[in-house]
Amino acid sequence: MDIIVLFFLCKYIYKKAVKKGLPPTHWIFYFLSLWFFGFFIGINIASLFYVIDKNNILSITPFALIAYPISFAGFHIIKTILDKKPDASNQDAKTLKNH
Image (cartoon, rainbow, N blue to C red):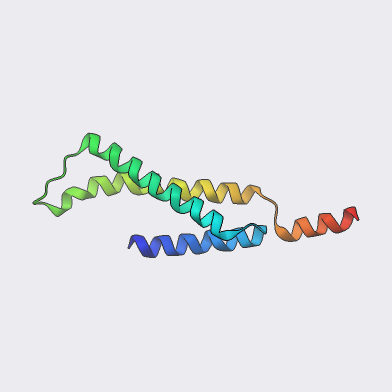
């Protein structure tokens, strides 16, 4: 499930970066870095409160409930940064006006 979610979020970041006229692979790398960093931080925070029971697979649920929201914060950070950048079509129009 994680791979499917990451695929669609990367696709969204890719389209937004192309629309802004920025190199999409850099922004996907930034997003994936923040995603995994957020997941790592979330797992560490959750480990302060919960202990993994190796005999019970449901014991991982509290970790996921903390790690995924922190991981999605990485997506929202990249999305916000890209939203603040001007569109490539607007940049072209401004360049033509100045000349």
